Length: 482
Ligand code: NAD
Image (cartoon, rainbow, N blue to C red; front, side):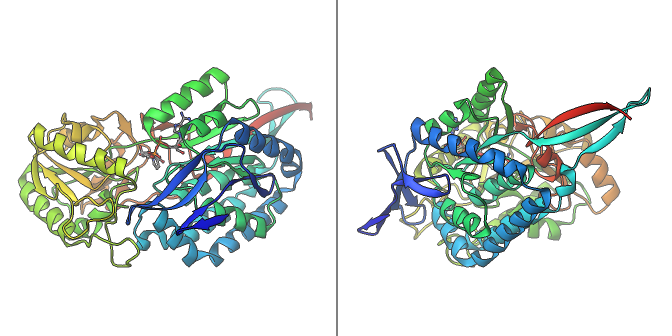
């Protein structure tokens, strides 16, 4: 690493347990979204870099996959310990990478550690199982084997968490890996591999090549990659899915969303008011499962709108390093342009702009956008249909529950959602009618012990839970005479 005028330049990719000179001469700028300052350069890895990383992962596979389940579980536990030692440094690094408020990133290393511990505890899912033939006296031994080399491609919004969601089950299953982080957020991989090394993860089990879309495409394309796990936009996911289909390569795609929060007529507005920022605008609106459409019964529409607007206006916008900040900058100039473009679309479509719509006063540097709420949004408007991925909320009126369910399901996405109502049984009944991979009742949070599986344009396959571990496994049935 060299440092000039406050810019750190890294020239290496992580291959076979060491940072080695990148083949690619191209470098990516890494920019702090709160200051717009470039503070690092990292390699924009090319096909040769990807090939070296995949070859290292392939070479490490026989050894790692042959370790006992107990050994792998112990390694994951030590890996978790190492994350817990790095809590505050990691949190500041993550905030600098993508502008997530420090109140958000403060939990990131604990979350990474907990994910590793959860998968370490699933080691019994790796054991052989004997299943008798339903007829006759034979039996089958069902073996669960690691799929092989896994290519893990991640987005910028929760860079560490989304890498660990893939890495923890992949490692526990016995796979070796190549991580390709998003070009906006390539810095967290350094503490990640440092923690892995300190925990005794053997060389070659985790490899990292930084870079952009072409680097990711080279990873997907590589003939020695057995599985691709991707989180990112639906457009990119579709392209990766098509390519993996052609190659008959196993693939998991966690993509975009446009989830709905359905407020029933008995919804507790105090509870909803306390929840709405985390539920619908978490991480400055850059969370895939945000309920960015709020569906409000017409009889309580203005009351609900007022509550949302009061809460959003009261939430501090500013320096993401400040522990009181709720809304930081968005990740990049490109993302701000996209968000502001959608705000214009909302106005042109005739939605009522109730708060926000511009840039916050006094924040001249940094990619800030005013938290924005639109009322009178019709279900067919683009701001009600397309993923914006910024601090923009659409509030839609409905007349009865059937209409609310219809609007909630009138989406090309099927990721998440929530239903608010004091009568929990009724709220659950409504939740069961929502066609998404997960729905919260009177709150929303994902649970890494339960499947997270977007439907429709939100993805293919499952992350989290034992199902997420199974997605890094292949099966062999040995039939024998009992
Ligand atoms: P993106 O699709 O632009 O990029 C994601 C990753 O894919 C990056 O690492 C990028 O370099 C890489 N990539 C780009 N083109 C590629 C190609 N052709 N082949 C292989 N890799 C390629 O997404 P983004 O803008 O970084 O992330 C935001 C999106 O991620 C949003 O749509 C959001 O909803 C989605 N997301 C989904 C989930 C989920 O679990 N469903 C979670 C977080 C984010």
